[in-house]
Image (cartoon, rainbow, N blue to C red; front, side):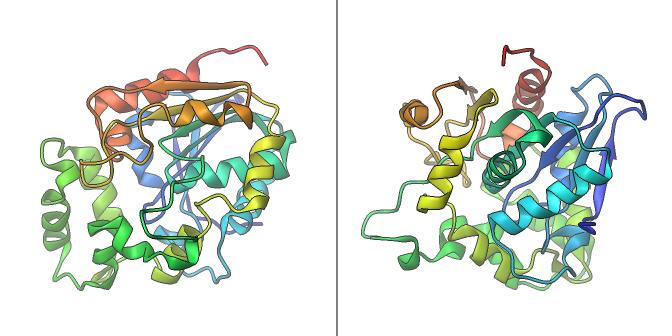
Length: 278
């Protein structure tokens, strides 16, 4: 058993639940807006090892360890293939799940993630990177103490990604994320996982092995509402690895609001509910 804390959305039915996996310093509550557009379809949104209510689970971390945890979760849910979504680093995790356990994945929906990131100028490898600096405010908060929930909400209200997109869903996510006086994510998990997002050979081979339909949705703005994670046209270049790839451009969202704002969440949900030939 994985032991992952999991938020369940939608109806309790015999229909096989979708799986939705959050980003590098997030938690399962980041899928609330998407779930509201899924017509009550059951959705499992776990907190990955080192995050949310799963932050007491020990390391090591890494994409392959997270994929093993998710496989255990889905096996406990009856196994069988189902639609699997991932946002940001979570998209990389679900690619590994699909590569390691294709029997559990009917289709992948990757939200602004899942394909190797370009190294910043001057960096020759992931070993040269300051992962915390690249992530900006989301990483800085891991070293901060907050007097109470209101102080933590105040931090998120000032985040540039949410300057015009604060909502009840964002507030629920942030309240859930506060663990005592600190954010719930373990900094070591962020650093270990972040180093694996720049295309190590074993990850490229995982992408190459995918045979199920794969959709990726791109945000035109990034983590601080500025430069995107993927430049325009960059994702189309990965069809040499994943020929069945469908690329969907989402207007007027950033790396967070593609998931949290209705204009982004509704498009993510539509991609999850769409029927595509295998």
